[in-house]
Length: 592
Image (cartoon, rainbow, N blue to C red; front, side, top):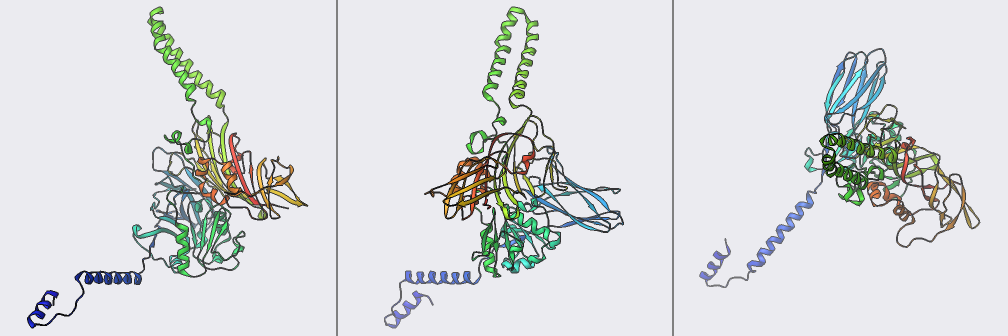
C-alpha cells in the first residue's frame, strides 16, 4: 500500500496518522542501504585480475630419421629477442649436423639469424634461436646433411600485456600466486609463457634479458646448473627473478643473495623476490615487480636509431660528431657549385660559346664530388669511430663483472665480423627492423654484415656477464688510505667508503698507487649519484635509465665507485676503433 492510500484511509477513519519520516529521508536511507549492499557484494566477490597463457602451439615435421617440433607463436618480450625453441630428435645411428636459419618476411631486410648444432645418434636436442623483437614474422629453415630442408613461417605472440616467463607448470604457478587464468587478453594483468620441463629451459642470457620478470614456480633443486647460471646472470645484469617456493640455501644458486627480513633483495643491477609460501603475499610481490611507470624507458639500455627529429631534441642527438653531416662546409661547396653552374655558366656561354658550357659544367660537378670525397677521406678516414658509455658491477670474490653499456658506431667502410663471448647480448633499437645485422649464435655471438654499415650511424646496447680480474685495491694505513688502480683503465675519479669515512680517490694510471683524501658527505645527493650526473649527460642517462638508478645508491662500508676512461670493459671493445667519447662507471667492493 502506498503512502497516499494510507493517508486517505486515516482521514476517513477520523484518526490522526502516525508520524512518518519525510520523503527525502526515506530516499536517502534507501540509497544508503543500496550502497551498503553493493559494498558488501563487492567485498564478498574480490576483484582479481588473471593472466593469459601465451605458451603457444607446436608443429611437427619429419625428414627421414629426423623428427622436428617447433613452436609457432612464442611470446614476444618488449625488448631484445623472442625465442624459437626447436626440438630435434635424431632417430638414426649416426650424428647429424643441423643448421637453423631465420629470415624476416619484410623484403627490405635481408639479414639472417642462424645457429648450428650437431645432434648425436638417437639423441634429442632442444635448440633455442633468439630472434629480434622488431621482426614480427619470417621463415625458419632447418637444414640437415642429406635431408630436404624444412621451411615454415613463424609469428610471435605480440600481446600488449606485460610478458612474463615462467619456469614451471601453470598449476604450480596458480597455486603459488593465486592468480587465475583468463582467455581474453583484455582481462589479463600479464601474459605468461610456461616452460614445463626445466631441462629444456634456455641457457642463453639473450632469451631472458628482454623479460621484465622471470618467475621460478618449481623447486630450485630441479633447475639444471646451466639454467641456474643463465638465470643468475640475468638477475645480476638487471633482471627480476621471482621465486614462488621458499627454499633453504638460496645462496647456493645465487651467491650474491643475502638473507634478510625483506622479501625483495638487490642483486647486482637486478633484484631477487623470494616468497615465503603465502599465495596472497606472492601475488602482491609479483604485481609490484610488474608495475612500471609508462613514462620510463622500456629496457635496461635503450639505444635509438637515426630519426628525423633527433637533431631537434637535445636528449636524442647522435652520440658521434662524425655521424653528423658537416652542413656548413657542404653548404659552401653547394653554393659555389650553384654559382659556377648558374651565373658562371651564363657568363662562360656569353664569352666562349655554348660548347664551353657543355665542357665546363661536368668538370665543375666532378670537382665538387671529388671535394666531398676528399673531405670524407681526410677527415673521417677509414677507421671505425665509436663512443662508449657503460656501468659495471664487479663481483670480485668470483672474478667476474656484469656490464650494461651503450655504443655508438660510424664507419666509412664496414668492419670485419665481430666475435663476442658467451653471455654477451647486443641489443638493437626496439622498433628498427632495418638496423640489425647477420647474427650467428653458434658458440657465442658473431655480429656480421649490418653491425656497422658503411657511412651509417648505429647504436647498440650491450649486456654482458663475463670473467674479469679488474679490481680496486685499498688498505687503511694509520689515518690514510692507500689505493692501487687495477681496473684495467686509467682511473679519472673515484670514491671509497672505508673505516667509516668517505675517501676521494685521485686520478691514477693503470697499476699506479695513490693516497685517498677524506671527503665530506654531500648534502643533497649521494656521492654516487653526483658522479653519475657528471659522467653521463641527460641523453645518455635516458638511454641507460634501467641501470643508472641502482648505481645512485649510497656506498656502504668497503664499497667503491670509480670513473675510468678508455674503450671500457664491454666485450665489443675488442673491435679496433677510434674513440670519440667515453665514460665508464665501475662499482664493487675494494680488495685488500
